[in-house]
Length: 80
Image (cartoon, rainbow, N blue to C red; front, side):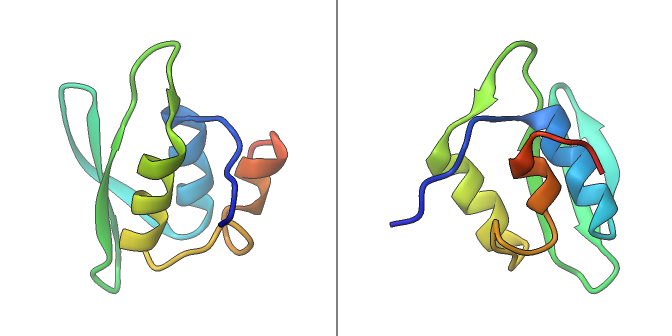
């Protein structure tokens, strides 16, 4: 099983923007992310909290991404 590092929702959104996704709307602390080809998911952005490994895996699976491609800088700790 692949292990994921601790990532904040805000950092994940900035990495996903670099991968061509956009925030289409926000409801409370939940940011709805969509790609032009139709892939979509919701990323929670709660202050001071990191995304759990299961939630992060589900978000990446919804977007058909792996942590090896497209979001590499998110997991390296640097911003895109």
